[in-house]
Image 1 (tube, rainbow, N blue to C red):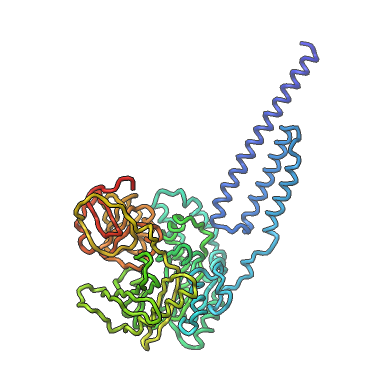
Image 2 (cartoon, rainbow, N blue to C red):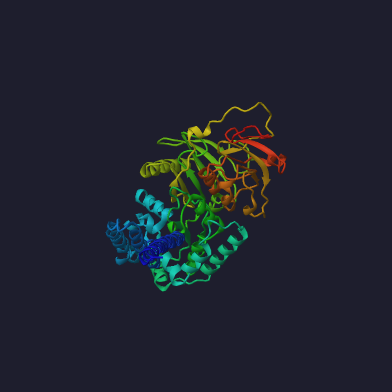
Length: 535
């Protein structure tokens, strides 16, 4: 072969080989960048974008991308030279985040509810923000309190070396299908937190704030969750823990209990179902002196069970109201009219055998009317209808303890199509969320694991508690023998738009496990078989 032809052939082979190797290197670096992005996405579920642990993989990705640009130009005859300048701009803008001190580092560890910073929801969480708003409207009726902020929470986690360990156990939470594995991981996280210690700076801030409120008096305290995004667009009703009647010497332990309450199976799954990242819901801790109540409960400034209601709904019990709110005890129910002087329209006792008309001794009509008037003023101040926790002390004074937006039913959600004429197998109860659904009957016993609830079933239970919240997004409907129409589970049921009827009584025992039934929650009827195709 002539030398010139051989040289040309070798030159072509070399050129081909160079382009091939360059293209392969480009693809490899692209895969590398995608891997880094995937890891960053998992990390940013737990870390803030300004966290220094995000900086190293970002630098590595920019280096890889720069080499990709170089290889692209080698393949194209240097046609994309401008890309280098654009990449430099993007790199500088991104890394600028890490050059400035984190704003979180300058935030206080403890904030009194009277402080303007208590109106910063990212610092004090949703529940404390609501109480702070109430205190601006009713300073004499809202107990004084303070918040250990989200900065204190981060310090508790970081100084006990828990951040990376928690991230490791929950990095693949979205893909875990083994419920036992998930439950064990979450129990481990709770164990770590409960065996942790409060950093000295957090403990000092807590003691100083508590002493400033107590003024030498030995108070009992309510220590409550106040996560960011709690009591906002998503209620988180019943997902976290509260500790009541806590003595001053036990505040640190109660604080850790509330922090650990952020990591229950139901809370982790709730965040997953509503699309919130772990980093989106840091926990603040709300401290308020306990009220010694003669009565307590919840008032809704509009009846959440009825679209366009012109009535207010009150649940009340004698003494502390925490068991009612959690759905563990039955309460008396009152309907109030709206207006300057709300009137009691009806009263339904918790014990339905009590003779009517019912007027409890522990709560007068005058107090209910005053409570209704205050609730309307609060709703006007907030600009929307509210679910307000309240208590009445032994001297008859009203205290407003919490406020959050109501999850309401819309008119169009109440409309149901006419089905075939048939006699319902069950009729009655209280509509929690209207709508139609059908599915196989599944009974949840008191000791059953909610994780075992199959998808698409009509769930039947005695008294639904917050532990079933993780199942709500996957069931067709919820029927309950008892249940609190304005408790935590009722709030979550409306939030997830699950057709539900409570207080159906022992009639639910007529249903048969595994049999298909059709539920019309708006009409509070249950039919045998499938009545509505296409649901």
